[in-house]
Image 1 (tube, rainbow, N blue to C red):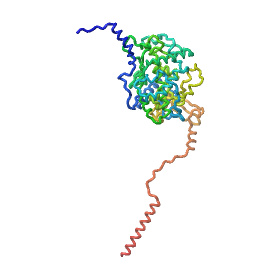
Image 2 (image 1 turned 180 degrees about the horizontal axis):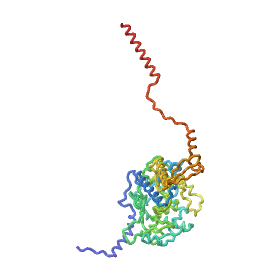
Image 3 (image 1 turned 60 degrees about the vertical axis):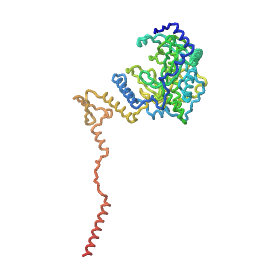
Image 4 (image 1 turned 90 degrees about the vertical axis):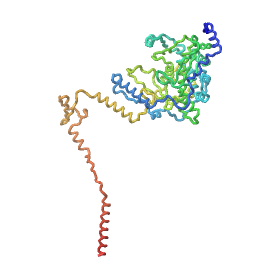
Length: 511
């Protein structure tokens, strides 16, 4: 049987029919690979073995810096990891009189209920406070500097980064002025993007970013037509945001709690808002701003050498990257923040310092009073996180090393470096002289110094004799034999005499 030849006109006809039936919208729904999480086990949690491997690597980096002279030998030592008691002292885990979130604003169309696939109502209800906080970050004029710059910033080819990456890369070289017109236009555009429902959210396990587990990922949806990858009606690119299943599991747990910890619930809401906007920054760029020409790679912003729009938004909004301590999305140990981008390479003298975020700051973001009133629209840095919490070097995790052990190891390392610094090729021998003079012998050359022994911290023989005379004599401890007390010994002697007397009287009576 001869094969039937399909003409190009037939392919176009079928494609137009598929577009007219809106079959393409089904591509944004969850695939068969992604399953609704079951059980109550979370995947993202820094185990003790993982912490010790990270701590060993961090100490190796510091040692290499010291060996190369980049880091001072006697630089101030700080611990790797947070101690739980420090997090409590700095208010990162508890807050007296903690207030629940009282935000009542409408949820942004980008986070509408229909945009979450395979999400039951009880789970979505637990996400609502966090989604309301994310909506505030997307609709308030003081939070729009990043979005306006991303939408309207002038993009120029970065020759240096293009050479390094081996492909054409672009950079937004300066911020766009934060005006009322720009703010209104960008806010409306993001709302229209949400109403188009070209961005969908699903849940998945084992998400990877640069070889490590991630909180979420965003990617374009591959449509049936390779020539037309945009939505046929909105002319926008469809995107698929996959959230780590840990968020689903924690929301499931909280939906069944009768008396949840209010502080932990606020931290979970904060983490939800951050991950939603972090991944939305990728998805909005992928969907093509204002029908721009499609670009497969994200741009670099200002002076940043890492093209990562999610972290760039966190840096604009909070003054650094924000992540839960120990990677627990429930915020069980609190939340940490640190500078971004990270110092490039191991040869940078700066060390990454992680700071804990106070519950007072997290609580204030979820109170309506914080967002009401008059605020300077140009002050887009007013939500930067204060760096006044507990600190840790390199690691955003709770340390498993006991307090005494950590201090002992740090002291031993510091003493060892000081001894190596003072150890000279010539051995100095000090000999005590007479009459206050001190004879110092170095490599066989003897010299006499009549200076003050107080300055040299060496005592003369006379001072030593007077000190020994004043000190009380220490008598050696005698070893006592185990003997019975005298009273017990005397009582036994008296008993013996009475027995002898009684036996003597009986013998005489028998005779």
